[in-house]
Structure formats: C-alpha cells, structure tokens
Length: 422
View (cartoon, rainbow, N blue to C red):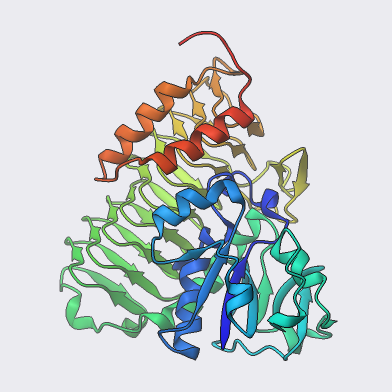
C-alpha cells in the first residue's frame, strides 16, 4: 500500500518572513497553497482516498494540526504502516498532471530531493528529518539532464521565486476550475479576451462597470467574492473566496486569498487570506502574509532607480533575486500606518509595526519591532500583541485559539529580548 509524504526541505529560512508562521507547504502560489495543489493532483491521479501526510518543523505542528484537523501532520506512523512512500518536496511543482517517479529512486533539483519513491524497508527511520531520511535511504539518486526532462517540473528555492512563478501556476491551475460560461457575467461588466478563460464561482457578485481582461491569461473568481464597481481585473489572476475587490486595479499575475479586502493598485503579487489593503496605494511584485493591515496610501517600490537586481534579506544575509523587478515581503500580523513607503526588496517580520516617517523603510524590519520616527525599536509588548491579533481575527469570525497563540508566543520569545514595561 502506497502513501504520499509532502515534506519541507532544510531551506525554510529562504522563505522568510512567511515561513516563520507556516510550513512551506502552506505557502500560497497560483490559485492554491502548495498543500491544496498537491492534494488536488494526487487525488485526481490516484483517487479521493489517497493517503497523504505532511511534515514540518515541530514548533508549527500543534497549530497546524488544529488548523487542518483532516490532515495528517508529522505522523511518523506512515513510515511503518505503508509498504511504499512517495515523497514530494513541498515547494516543487508540476505543470502537468504527471506524478510518475521511478521505483527505488530519488530525483534531485538544485541539490535538494524533489520527489522520491522508496520502499519503507529501505528507509532509515532513525533520521530526524524527512530530507535526511531520503538522503540516507539505499536507493538510486539521479538528476535530470536537459530541459526536456524538467520542462514540467520545478522547485522554488526562495520566497521571491514564488512571486516570479505565480503567473505560470495561475495559468496551470485554471484547469481545476474550467470556464463557467458568460451567462454568469452581468451585461454591465466588460469582458476583454476569451470568455472561456473566466471562471466565476457560486455567489460571486459583480457590480456594474467592472472589467475582466483575460487577454493575457485566465481569471478565477471564487465563491462569494464581491467585485465592486469600477474594478479592473487582468489575468492571470485568482480572487479567493469571500474576498472584496473595492474598485481596485488588479494587474496580471495576482493571487488574492480568502476574505481579503483589496483597493488601490496591485501587480504580480500574492496575498494570503484575511489581509486588508482597503485603501489606495500600490503593491507590486510582493508577497504579503495573513492578517496584515495596510494603512491608506501604503506603497512599495518594486524597481530601483539604477535598474539593478534587487537584493532581499533572508536571515543573516541579503541575497540577489537576479531580477530588477521585485517588491516587498511582509509577514503575518504586520501593520502599516497611513502613507507608509516600503523600500525595494524590504522584508518585514511577523508582528512588526511600520509608522510613516516621510522616508523609505530600511531593507529589513525584524519580527515584532516598530519602525517609528525613522528608527527600528523594540516596542511590541507580547500581551498587547496577542490581544490585538485576537481582536483582528475575531472581525473575520476566527478565534485565535490556544495553539495559534502559543506559536506566536514562542516566535516572540525567540526574536525579542526580555524588556521591562507593559
């Protein structure tokens, strides 16, 4: 009997700051998280009752078991209960429905195991991590040679790879939706391009004088979303369930998570769910976490004045993205004041506060810090932060829960020195 194991490799720090609060398989790219996409692909290929297991860092396990009670998270019993395991790297992707892997073999890309198919008797179960278990198994390892062997297969290695990849995965993900037919689109909405490249879910409301432009790729608007008057949405694009698009300009290559509120202008960016960008302002070539609140006119730069490649902070180093078009990376529960100006390639850690100082932010603002009066200060108090997070979540009818609060507390104590005060 065969099982599938979706695992993180050791590169989770490369997906800072989003990876501070989530497994790599819960990162959004395209119309889905990697978890959702792998579940779709596996069950479409091997049946609805396929056995799928997920592995992540231990400190995230209690919260993600609570968040996804139907998912098997860090259940090591899989290595004893099943005769064969197919391993899949969380941030790898297939642009086709093929999930074939040779028996007793490991496929590597960029020196990381991407997929493997191994008999359980050949696994070294004493290994602490799944990647180590794969590397120490007695099976054949190989790397593809030539573009033909990897044309449908790839792997993201850094957070900015997801921004660059988003448009391609959006186009590929459209096959899971399919055209819903022009009859669902009101006559007061303008459609540009192929109408069969537009999907509207159940209960979608589109106010008059909106534009759906599918000339560059498909548009997927999921169940319960509201598209307010004078919005313009360009494909490829995904608008999540119960999201609100408030007269915004949604340029190509955008993924908007569930229950987001989006106004202003957004281009080639990814938003996790429950984030507010209600007002005017520009966000481009960026990755925004969950429970973020952006004050009016918050704007980021996604192009340097000298047109050179943008560097982005990941722990202890700034890395070149090898792209001159890259914006900002904002972790969960970040808040920005009105008029905040976010620098090119800026990374903002979980729970940080940005207050407009009249100038661009520095390239990195640590978790739970305040950027205020042009300086980075340790100003966030834990109890106040947890209370505010719970209040914001309750506005979306979500209880903060003990597991989630504990995960945030652990993260806080890791990054913030003990200080006196409230």
